[in-house]
Image (cartoon, rainbow, N blue to C red; front, side, top):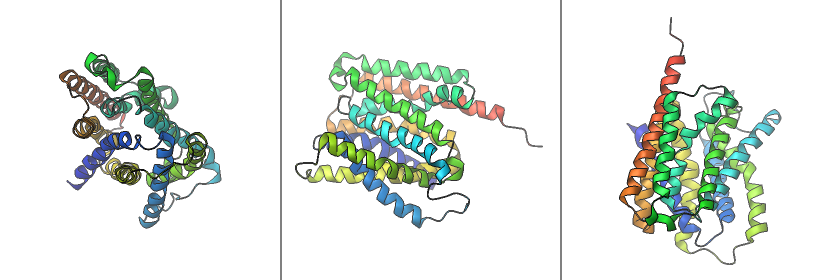
Amino acid sequence: MLIYLQLVLAMFFYGLSFVSTKIVLASLGPITILWVRLLLSACFLILLDSAIPDRREIRSRWPHRADLDSLLLVTLFQPLLYFIAETTGLQYVSASIAAIIIATIPVFTPVFARPFLGERIRPLTVIGLLLSLAGVATIVFERRIDAQFTPGGLALVFTAVLAAVGYTIAVKRVAPRYRPLSIVKLQSLFGLPLLLFLGLSIEGVPSSMPPPPAIAHLLYLGIFPSSLAFVFLSTGIRKLGANRTNVFVNLVPVFTAVVAWMVLGEVFTVQKVVGMAVVIAGVLAAQRGQTAGAAQSRPVAR
């Protein structure tokens, strides 16, 4: 029961992160938000990674020279490309619409896993992809919420989706040699210098301290969705498996939409709810297809 509570909390942390980012964007630029968020996360994860023992001693906490190219590729996809595209896109897309698009990551992953990893695409996966795209179209073509997004903003959020897919593929090369907590710690440490350089070069040093609410949301972004949610998600994957854990991703746009409606006053129309339901149905169909495919390919015990 505890693991299910942890997964629900992880999805709540992720869902609320879109709202928190929108609030902080009123005080700081997107790159500044990212390097501060990454700095907080890196410090927290270093302490956490050192404090939690690893039963599998063959897995390293720090990078081997032979893995540097693979770890840099992982870092390129996430946090660099993913967070830059997502945070910048949130300047032009409402929090709830961004969360709905990000929720399609499990749908697009099998499509790109086929050419790069040789994984078979199941018919339900294709149906899930089409359903998810139809749900997104239902939302973005509603005239009453035109002000909640721009075409460029949608393109940026979809870029974040592709970056997340690239991360999933790239991380498979180093996953056996490092525990997930260590991988995220290394991503933060590798990505931090570049984001700090970009932030200072493009946006400069903030002229004044953000207001207390923005500081509180920055702390939230660095500790909860970037750190604790990851720990909960990793625990879920280890105990329940990736497919059963991924089902909880469907809660992210629901949490975001409700909190964005309560805090940011975003429009919550019937068509938006219908589109959200279609997207979630598509994600569930795609995940069911991958689960069925995995079950069929599993060898029979003798």
